[in-house]
Image (cartoon, rainbow, N blue to C red; front, side, top):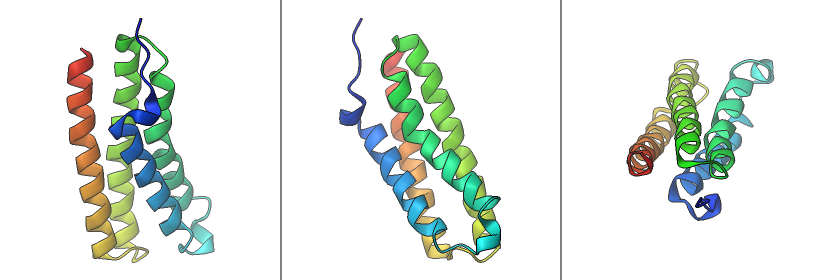
Length: 117
């Protein structure tokens, strides 16, 4: 069985970059959001590269399941960013930049997943 080196996967690298971007922006959120939206954004953004890393040690079929979880987290993150923009915690420019990265991640990840199956 072939194992994937997750650190060399472009989907993991982009997922990690998205997670670090989120970490940077939530540090500017109001303190009353620490346990609500900030926490949600942090958890789901960290879930994106983490599930790719965890799944990379599994069979391709199992890896595909972990990729599904990672993709789900990316869609959840998009929704949370819309809420953050609505609450004026992030600008439309920041929202657009992050949405573009997330969309690129989703396209790349779905392509990678199709090659696994």
